[in-house]
Image 1: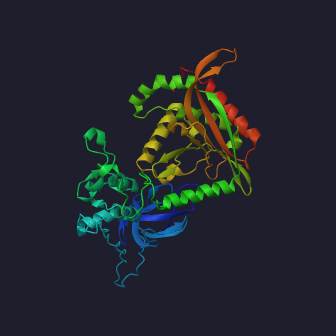
Image 2: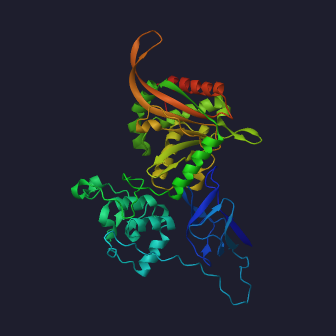
Length: 444
């Protein structure tokens, strides 16, 4: 029996995906749950597992091609089922079209590049990087064979190429680069010394997100282009409203300070204010379920599950992985779940399931010192709430005494089609109350 594989939906609001790399070729066998293709969107690069054990009969989409979610991308003949070729016709399964050879671009000075690509090494290089990543490597004159990728199964990601580029000529002379190396610990320079203290723009006249150069144009990659489209769509579709409250988080701060060292020793993850904030948000969503809803053409759908998205800013991207069934987790459970997702996001290892199903989003803008912000709502949700930077300041208390307290702003953007100001302000007031009532010596 033949099974048609379709482009998965990599996130609730994602409508299309790109075949970044085929991990198998026509005629290859594939085991059930074995990855056979890598697809990408603005949010994630993910390996898609086969739902059956069988032989790949046909690849319907070329590498680099973008198709809508649900569109057929491959056909797999299950084990024991007849193949796509009629018995006795003597024809072998069609071979996959070999990837186009990588031609190294000329060096900035017009001379030949400082590396030579051999056939065997070229094949391996092509298989461990997507077309977009290979193109980026060519633009930055990086020999992709020299990079030890940080992606799944050692695949080279765009971040790997940009990191290699920042290391200068070493990336193009056959020196193996391990992305994520602690250069301070090894004594190696993070950036080559620039002559005269000036930066030399890349030969293409463009710069990277990681190191923007004034006077140059940063080309829109697929991720940035789709992020731009989604943000505009959200602002044009959902009428955004905004509100803010100031919260005394002194007790939460003391609680976290008391537990953070032990927590990191036991779990390997740092304990921030985020899981405490998430716990309070979850309880406030239970009190105001309309904030855990979404607008549809049939009406307002109130979600059964409480799946909290965590907005994570990366050097070249923005991702919102989701803690599923967050209402069933303790503060410790939320801390571990969030820590795992943040770690995967930074290593570019988020999968399809990590990004799907969010019903409400939190954002820790305070990690970068933000005092107040008005975030854009994640499509298909009613709101997003931020925790801003914690500031020590004098506060007049109910008995007119003045005390030094740890204060934090919480900012809420809401879809005014779903909720009005009465519900939104009630949610924020409830969130403030829950955060301020948390004990200084509670249990995780």
